[in-house]
Image (cartoon, rainbow, N blue to C red):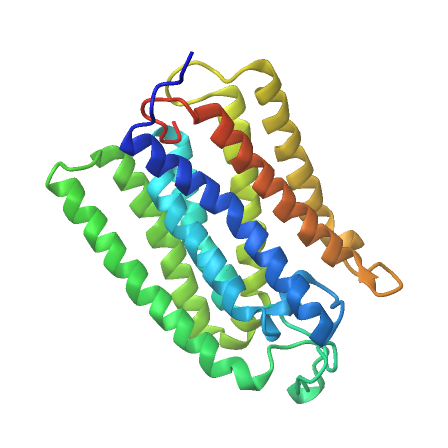
Length: 282
């Protein structure tokens, strides 16, 4: 018995989900290929300051685009729209690092600070944030125009636009009025928020899908386990992040675990919706 050929829509959504999970593979591959040059660094985020940077930023940006395309309906739509707004911040704003933590990089911090974004990257960050705010504002205008024209659900769009607008406003105000604080904490805040939203999506998908039947029992259990492990990993990182065994730091292990769980969720989503006629996240 032969399976029914996939429709164009099915292929599109399948490839999007595969690409989102594949972005994790790209990040890991870029990190591994940079290791012979810089070695094992205190965190995965430190590899932003290595030749892995281009792939890292591109992979995370592609995830944001995929989220907008897959946001679907109901609570998952609002959650994934929020994740799509947070993801670019993880990419364009690097983590703060301590002096000499990345071989070959001048990362001396001014004013005796223990950690900072090296001054050589300030212009890159400011350019990235400014671009992010401009593009984000244009996307909001487009979303409103489509809602007014009746091309998309107005209530759902109003919720997503409201949350995204609040996030963009918070980014702009903190970047403008508290620049040093923004550079110190924006990456961590965006990363924590991003993985928290993914955990929430996993729970909602397991216990209260917006449309259609609930997933099979084993998938429900898997989604809840992923959500719990993501929560424990992210929330617990301040406690174990500074711990290390030899050259392996807890924060490095935690970031790897979070990305693996993120990829696992999207692989399971691909399995769940593989043969669905309308495989958008529901």
